[in-house]
Length: 395
Image (cartoon, rainbow, N blue to C red; front, side, top):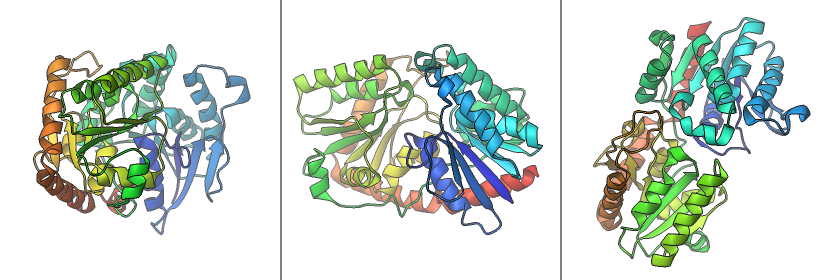
C-alpha cells in the first residue's frame, strides 16, 4: 500500500506539535513492511528519499497566508498521483488531500491536530484568511473518508464542530512520543550555558507565542512564585506583533521585580530542549486550547513533573497527582477558550507550580512516574499500527 502524507511542517522546518507528530509518525510508518510512505511538505528541497517539498508559488509571495496555503496545496495535489491513500495534517495541507482525493479517486484521511472553529484568535494572524482556513477545514473534514482525532476530547470537538460528519468516521489515535529521543539527559554545563542554574528550583515553558498556549497567564502567575524559583521561557514565533509585544512587556515587568527570568526567543535544537527539561523541577503548560499536548509528553519522557491546564486532551496525558498537577479552568463558551476568571486561573496556576517546584522529592517522584507513563502508553509503534489500520479500512 502506498500512503502519501501531506503536511506543512516536516524536518528541518518544524515549529509546532503537529510537525513533531508528522515526523515521528512517518518514521514509525516506514518501519511497517507493506507500506510505501511518501511525504509532501512545504518549503525548500529535502534530501530525504521519498520526500517532496513545494514552495509558495512566486505569484503568491505577498498574498494572505491562507491563499499561499491554497497555492501550495494545488501543487501538492498534482504531485501525489499513483497513491493508494492520502493522509493530510492540519488545514494547511487539508485541501491538497481533498482535491487529490477527487482527482485520483483515492480515500483521504485527515488528522485533526486542532480545529479552526476553536481558534478564533487566528483572525489576528490571518485576517480574512481565517474565513478561508475555516472553509478549507470544514470542506476537508466533511469530505474525508476518515478523520483521526488525537484525543478523546478532540473527537468530541470534531463531532460538535462539524455535525455533518458521521461520528463513525471519526477515530481516536493519540499522539505518541519517541522515548529514545526524549529521555533524561543530564548535561549541567549546557544547561548553565543556556542560562538556567540547575542548583535552583525551576519552571520551564516550551512553546510558540500564541493565544492558545496561554503564556501571558503563566507570566502573570510567575509574579506569585517564591523568589528562589527561576523561570526559563523557550518561547518564539509569535502569531502576531501584538501578542509578541504583550509577552515582551510582561517579561520586562517581571524582571523589574525579581531575578531568575530567562527568555530564549528562538527555537532550540532538541538536545538543548532535552537538557533543559531534564534539569527542570517542573514543566509548565498553561494552554487554554490543547487537543492533546505533545509537549507534555516530551517533558514526561524526560522525567519531569508537569503542571498543566485541565483542558482538551491534556488530562488524557497528565495523570493528576501522579505525573503532575492539573489546574482547573472555567472557559468562555465563545470559542476562544479564555478563562472566565483569569485572575483565579493564574492564582491556581501559581499555587500548583509552587507546590511542585518547592518540593523536590515530590517533583522527582512525579517525573519518574511520567517517564514510565510515556514509555508504556504512548509509543509510536502503536500509533503507526493504528494509523495503518485506518488506511486499510478506507480502501
